[in-house]
Image 1 (tube, one colour):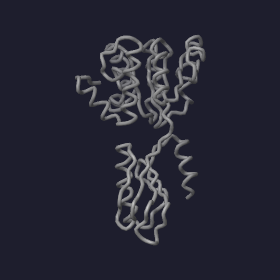
Image 2 (cartoon, rainbow, N blue to C red):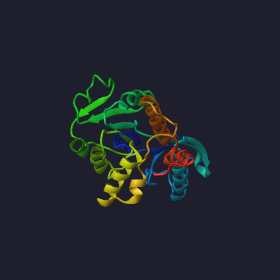
Image 3 (cartoon, rainbow, N blue to C red):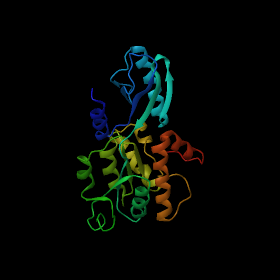
Image 4 (cartoon, rainbow, N blue to C red):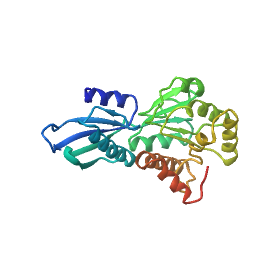
Length: 255
């Protein structure tokens, strides 16, 4: 296995994984610089040299992936090992190009997201309104059907109506995206989620939708709402969904 080629392959596929490198080997039969890739499901690409050592490395690598933090560890005769968590560039897809989308694209870009804005209105999803972003003017269902969405994709749904919310979620929920957030009143959100459940989506999958969207900051203006959304995106990206859920639960917000 060529580690560099495999790293590039996994990053292009949108996968987060751990690159394990031997820094200071403990025995002569393990050379410094030896590399193994540990994927999120525990699969190893390569080997350190024995099943016992591979098992110990897998355990440490999965812990690093869970914390989303690199680490150095001493593992038996293997010596000092560096565990580096590698992830593709996070991508934000915004469905809906209304007034909240304008500050949202700016703030999301500032914290490192590559941003795409989708709307079925060409005068809204226009490059002049969203400099530095990819804009797509197309029917939501048609555009999303063939759009590559994966574990590094974060989706914010802020369309102008519940029918468009449904169209977007029908295409997004079957995909393994990092985050799905839905804006709207309790009545509108309840209608959308109930309709999707009747169409066959499980309650567990629907509970994965962050709604009301954003970290509970008491936001009111479009800029404040955009900040609350971006703060939730950053929390999920850095700390995981459980931490973002904990912040919501602290003020009594449930799906």
